[in-house]
Image (cartoon, rainbow, N blue to C red; front, side, top):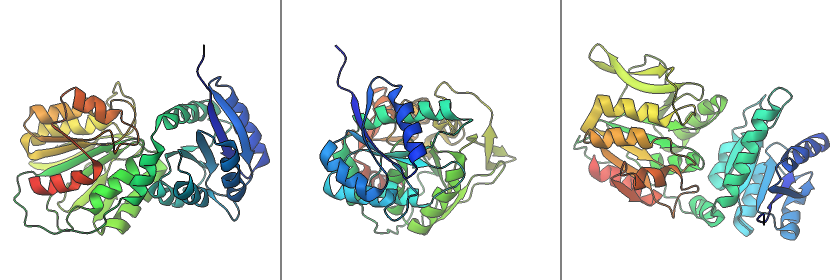
Length: 342
């Protein structure tokens, strides 16, 4: 006997796109579109009546947009919310919605990318249906944005963080609670479309007060600087003479994502060894496990997010159960642990 279908409520102001998206979703026999709405206000009211498992909402709508939907639902009746983004524009409010507790975002299917985006959307629906939506609200509410300063002991020379689904909010929480005068570089690999990486870097800079930029091929690493891996290439760390630099890589990894977390962490394990801290956060799959293992085998410090605080306990679970992660802990404890180790 097949299990119950995943009930979807779709919020989209374009009548044409409501039809297109509903038809695409219904191709998956495990998904049922129980209702649609043309704006955020109508959508929130229909959630009360239809009680969907997952809400899919456009970000850009007149008056009551996707951010309104997330804020209302996460306050009153939290559940997984997938944001739809138009491929022709980058909406910085997406990161506001993620910070408020949205599950993740995906591109709207277009004529040339319909199959690719359909696969991404349905996969995300299945991931979202497994998420503990109470955690989404707790993550949105449980932030400590106090800044710290400290006298560095310089036991480690670099921090690397990898994340996927649920990562933007988790990353923001961690770096917001690291010292403003941190004396090591931080490199972040977040699974995210390339056109959003620059916006995410700008948001981190605004919220943390630290210098944040997208890593350039051949760029030298600077202390007290956060580098984001680009969304359309794999990033690793190498040498230029005697200086550490960032390098783009064409290597293909089994966990095929851009940027590959394994690519980054493996290179850091080889180059920095025991002087590196590697962190794996929430996300589906097992990207980062191999790289984290390299850091641990080289004597570095490895950390993973625990199940209770992870939106999707996939990558952290594999990292911890395989022994690649030495320490597993709640998200809010990770920055404290890093500070104590530095």
